Length: 113
Ligand code: 5GP
Ligand code: ZN
Image 1 (cartoon, helix red, strand yellow):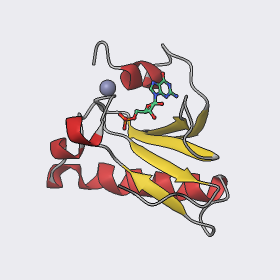
Image 2: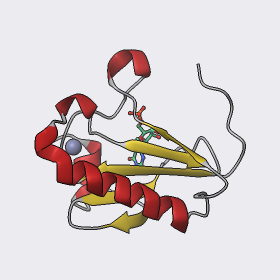
Image 3: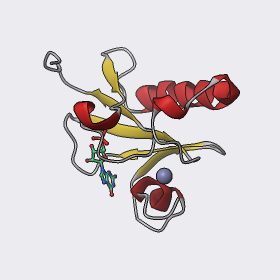
Image 4: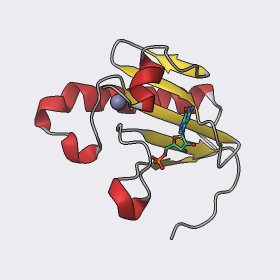
């Protein structure tokens, strides 16, 4: 989608530090990390948020979670633990309106609001 930062990252128009990629999924370092490990896992397809998902996306959802597990192992947080966050719309503070999952770890994380 035009003017979507994460679509531009998918197409290589904006540089990123990639940590995982397959046909449907990409994962890269967050530009403003909130924890020692802060990776964003996204579907390459432009979906605005989890509210755009449906049973039609069963394969994509499975692949997102497979990528999250691969990233967690590769980042060394699969056993120490990590938090998975997906902000949805204004009250959650979603800034980039392309579905993404934050993988946060590498330290004891604070309690959530
Ligand atoms: P949101 O608040 O929408 O859930 O999170 C968007 C995330 O994208 C933020 O953590 C922000 O730091 C990250 N971000 C925004 N622009 C870029 C960018 O150009 N490159 C990368 N790697 N991360 C970005
Ligand atoms: Zn997009």
